[in-house]
Amino acid sequence: MSENEGVKLTDYELQLMALFEKLTRVPAKDCIVDDELDRIIFVVGKGLAPFAVGKNGSKIQMLRRAFKKDVEIIEYGKNIEEAMRNSLYPAQVVDVKVKGDGDRKVVYVKVPESHMGMAIGRGGRNIKRAKLVARRYFGISDVRVSPA
Image 1 (cartoon, rainbow, N blue to C red):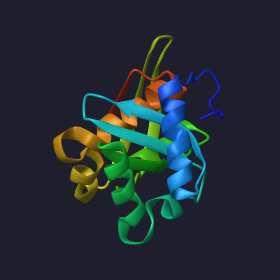
Image 2 (image 1 turned 30 degrees about the vertical axis):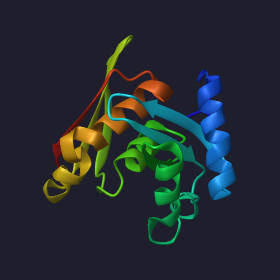
Image 3 (image 1 turned 180 degrees about the vertical axis):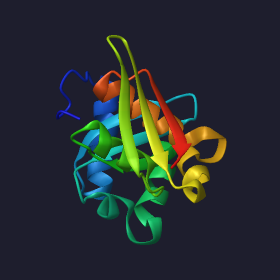
Image 4 (image 1 turned 120 degrees about the vertical axis):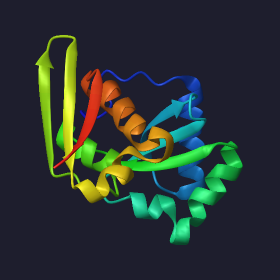
């Protein structure tokens, strides 16, 4: 993820990021509004997610009440491999490969078989988050997860 290069933030997203920073005291690098799953995904700097989540998720609960939506926090990844590891966390990512050319690039992520459920998430939430991140920062059209 090249420091928001090419990512245009709306006024609404900027307002959400400002409120996020005010409530958590952690600066947000980006904000992805996922209307389909009624959630807001905040991207924070490397190593800052635990501070944004708070002790026992206390800040997440406060953010959910403030935004009246589900709130998720992921750490920034400077390349596709790091971005996939961060967006599929806590699932362990074994391998990341990008295949395809031009407009149609697909990321293939391998995780241990025991982590498949975690990587996909309830109702596909986690894999959809990875797809949103991959599309927004790297122009990737799809993300596929398979057992290692």
